Structure formats: C-alpha cells, structure tokens
Length: 416
Ligand code: GDP
Ligand code: IMO
Ligand code: MG
Image (tube, rainbow, N blue to C red; front, side, top):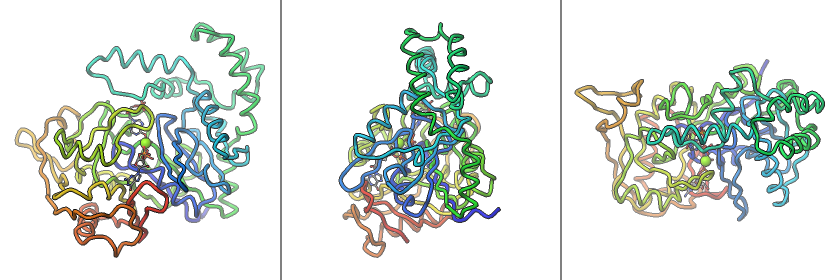
C-alpha cells in the first residue's frame, strides 16, 4: 500500500524542542494528526493568533477546526486528565466531536494508583530519583506489559467494567467517586473509542495524509535514551507505526525537531549543561520552564554527538531548527563534537550513564551574530553568522534543515 505524504515529527533531544509548534505548522497540510506514545507527561505549546494553547494529551492538530486527531494505542491515557483538557479546550471555543477526536480501543489507561506509585517510587529513590512528571506514566506502561491494564475499550462494556472495578476497590481511597467517574467516562468517551488501526487504514486508502506527533525526545527513549533517566515509552520515529497499528512504511517522511541549544528537565546526565551565566541567559531568554510541572529546565549547548546518533537511528530526512532567536545576543556559540573520559574519546552515547556523566566535552566554537532573528520569516533576512550556524549543523548531521523557527508564534517560521 502506498502512503501518500505521511510525516512523522519527533524531538531529537530531551523533549521540549518545539514539537508542538512544528506539528501545528505542518498540520495545515495533513488530514489526521496522531499521537503514538507517551501520555500527559507531554506539554506542547502552540501560539495561534495571540492565543497560547498548552496541550498535554490531545494532538496539536485539534486547534485547527478542519482536522481530525487521534490517540494511538501506544499512548497511556489518564481519563481524568483527558476530561479536564477536553473541557479547557471546549471553553476556549474548540469543538471536539467524536469525528474529530478518536481514541484507540486498545490504548492502556493510567489509573489513579499509577500516579501514587510513580510518586512513591520517586520518593524512595531519594537523590537518585529520575525526576518524572509524577503522572503515573511508568507504572501504567508496566501494567500494560504485565498484562493487567485497563484499556480504553473496556469503557464500551459498562457491566463488565463495573464488575472488574470491584476487584481494584482496595487501590483507591474513595471507591464510590472512582467508580462513578469511570461510569461517566464510559458514557461520555465511548463515541470516541474506535479500532483506530482500521480507521487509519481506511483513511490512507482514501488518500488522506497522517501527521504523527511525537512526544518527549529521542534521548528519553526507554531503549536508546540515557537509561534509566528516560521515560517509559519508545519515542523513536518507528514507534509511529508500532503505536498506531499502521504498516512500517506509513511512518513516511521523518522530520526531527532540534532546538538550537539543549534543555533537559529532571535528572540524568547532560554533558553540555551550562551552570554559568550563559546557561542562565538561555533559560531566561528561552523561557525554559516545564510546561507540565513548571520546573526550571537545565540549559546547555547543542550536542552534535547526540544529534548525529539520533539522526542515524531515526532515519531523519529533514530537520526543523527551533529557538534560533534565543541565541541572538551570544558573542560565540559552541557545539559538542566528542566526549573524553579516562583517555577514551567517545563520538556516540556510551551504554552506561556513569560513563557519560563527568565527561569532558570537545567543542567547536562558532561566532555569534548578535543581531535580531526573532520573528524573521525569510531565510535571506538571517544574519550571515546565523546562516553559517545552520550550515554547520547540516554538515555535522548530514541532514538538511528545511524549517527554522524564530519565535513561539505560528508565523515565526522560515521554510526553505
Ligand atoms: P514541545 O514539548 O516540544 O512541544 O515544546 P514545549 O512547548 O514544551 O516548549 C517549547 C517552548 O518554546 C514553548 O513555550 C514554545 O512556545 C516556545 N517556542 C517554540 N519555538 C520557538 C522559537 O523558535 N523561539 C522561541 N523564542 N520560542 C519558541
Ligand atoms: P514533551 O513532549 C521534557 C521527562 C521527565 C523525566 C523523564 C521521565 O513536552 O517534550 P515520566 O513522567 O515520563 O516518567 O518522566 O522524562 N519528560 C519530559 N521532559 N519534555 C517532555 O515531553 C517530557 N516527558 C517526560 O522530566 O526526566
Ligand atoms: Mg514540552
């Protein structure tokens, strides 16, 4: 089967690369926007006609009234969070019909006890904590592979659901309220719950195009990230097929989103982290505070070692470079090209995070441009040193940069 012009967007760092903005940008030319992993640990920001939307669970395409959206079974779904987000968006004037928002029947649910487990485990880890979003993501995925999860489709049979709920009565404080909520979800959400693989296959046959919206970032991938300081899902591009039930070829064009510098929320190694005034400057200028938890994001230089590896594993065909404007005032810009530790030079991510922490970093230094790129929409208008930085990243990664973001608003975008 031919898959016309599908696109998969993923983040290539530790999340918050500006995926939401890029998805919003490309959604104009797609028919269905689909999330395929993660849950409401994601926080995707769009700024459209002066209105800022912060989406955790609903695909970013929902803000465009003529688009359909869906959550694949690779997503873990907190029904309470979903209900709240649907209400918030409805209040903002966005209509969410079953036609426009579908949920895969085989998606696993995040239950209230998963959140408690997540937070308790983090407390138990003390200084070694992962710094999760505390939303029950990990425990929900554990129950999925442990073959004991509740799934979205369970809401379609209220009687069987009710019977099964009795079995988890000891897991919640207020069982009556919990069971009542579940019965309400079963009424309100049932029309949205579908065999998504079938719906998507049909829509592909009609020639409609899908835009897959990745959450988190490649170095939070449970297998390829900085384990154990990762999230509990695969965040890599091929998950777009695995997490929706479409054939591998449906992944289509793979676009990697890379921030012009690096940020990370939560714990874990971060070789190019800056704990000086430049780091402070990036955080302040880039408004680097977590969308989900409000935590201050750690900031540092772009890591070319990680970028190259991410491009290889994900088969990145084009890059979107975001937040270029945040570098506007810097006199010089650095990019990591290798790590060194105990006489060993690394040009890839070592297996163990211990080998990756306290490395000394080998940098290339490029001249800054010290002029304003914020809001530019035309490549030719960029200062020469900004163009040189873009060309440098293309050379380093071996991938063309086809889109440059110069601000949070939808229109602050350069397309090449
Ligand atoms: P996501 O999780 O990858 O969707 O990214 P987040 O929304 O968590 O974080 C990106 C933040 O940067 C948001 O506040 C965006 O509004 C903002 N943003 C996105 N692109 C740009 C850009 O090019 N320049 C600036 N200054 N801000 C941007
Ligand atoms: P978006 O989609 C940045 C991080 C958490 C923590 C680790 C595990 O907005 O880019 P989890 O709650 O998933 O078990 O936490 O992953 N994390 C993110 N960091 N952006 C995200 O999403 C993230 N989602 C999870 O901070 O370090
Ligand atoms: Mg985010």
